[in-house]
Amino acid sequence: MILSGQSPPEIFVDGEERDIKIRPNIAGTEVVLLGATPAGQREIIIEVVGPKRNITLQEKRRFLGLWLGLGKINYNNVPSYYNILSSKPLNEISDQETFNKLGLGLENLPLGKAEIINSDLKQRIFDKRLRTEMQNKGQFLENESSIAVRSGPGKVGLFSTEFFLPSNSLQGKYFVRYFTFRDGNFISYTENTIDLKQAGFSRVVWLTANNFPLIYGLLAVILSGLVGWLVSIIFRQLKIS
Amino acid sequence: MEFYLPIAEMSINPVGFLVLGIVVGTLSGTFGVGGGFLMTPLLILLGIPPAIAVASEANHIVGSSLSGTIGHLRRRAVDIRMGNVLLTGGVLGSIVGILIFNSLKEAGFVDLLVTIAYFFFLTIIGLLMLYESLDSMGLLGHKKRSRFYHHSWVMGLPLKVRFRRSGLYISLIPPYLVGFVVGILSAIMGVGGGFIMIPAMIYILRMPTSVVVGTSLYQIIFITSIVTILHATTNQTVDFVLALILLVGGAIGAQLGVRLSNKLKGPALRVALSILVLSVGIVMGLELILEPDQSITILAGGH
Image 1 (cartoon, chains in turn red, purple):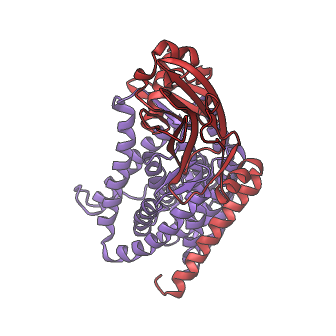
Image 2: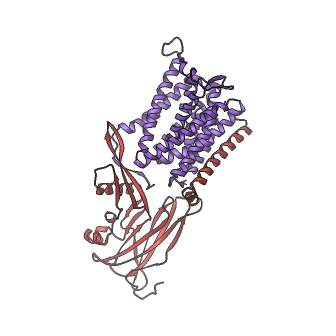
């Protein structure tokens, strides 16, 4: 780790990939991010970008007096999770132009090319809606001023923050990108990753359903039938029916 | 408490869904229908994606109809021969239904189809039931019940077979067609089809009401099993965790419902059911007519 009294490199974070297991029956897990910078006027922005997933939007239009979901917009590479954390409000750290150059911020988060079926609208309209929907669902988050910076021993500044991954978070690699700024100027960048794994049962079910669909279908039928049969036995024993 | 559905990829409150199972189970125990036609739209209204709601509900009905059939078999209220004929038509129908479902899914129209199918069938059947039950209560001023029409075309068809338990000697063609149509609907709507099958058995095939529910449930076990496997292999949309939660709730509810139905009068019961069916249909219909708050929404993915 960092030796006291010695100035660290511009930014230091644990470079190891971290494994996090998440269980389906708990609300989720708290992830703590720690790091060090040289002491002094450093501001920090951290972005967490989750694994990509498919998302389909529908556009409802009036057709023969009915509101029908006619337009379909398929995205194949939407981050399933996005969180931007910072040590101060973003507009106090730097200006939008700098953020744009760095590709930093929710506005600059790439959503990938969309396949637009049966709609005349432009992709940027759908992108905007998708960002809002994901924010409403709590999957795209902005947590300004959520990073605590303290001066550590000697010339070291320590920062820490935490964020919450709900239990339904997609498994896979979460990229964590760290940016430091001083006096409105970008100073340094580093990144590491968190590998999230759905633990146990849910994962097995999902893999079986997708890799062995026939076996899964048969098992689903047998299980349902078995439970139904058990129910009839139990209620007969209890003389209820 | 949160519970993660592995296929729907979303967290749900299992207590809420258990209660939903109990409520729908109570209704189905009271009225002698499978309850899928209520459960699937309710699941969709609760945010389960329609494709997953349809497939998982089919999986749920496998268990609930098996449980129900066992009870009816003990009371000798299942016409197995008739069930097998309905089943043969139903198997073909469900395969056709899955083909329709998948071609529309590819074109992106599956949710539309499901909503329209529900609106259409629930409204029509709700109205027919309401009319019939009010009529049988004598509230519509008809002196004589005009329940049984003279189906000369049914009687005139060839390939006649004796169905002993139903006390019928009729052609194989009408039950075969009824099975076929219900099979298509099962695949598209994620229902056992009891709410269509039972009126068809009574009004078209003229089966005695004592064997109607048991026979319908008997063939529903097989149809929904096939539909479940077809959805699992072609769409990977069967969430058996969801199905099992609903099944446990439904089993408790069905027993409550049987007790409740003994306390309620028949025609009043049918009026209540018809109003229920109608209101679910109307809610589905309003979704089509009312302008949505937001015209662009997430349809699938993104939890």
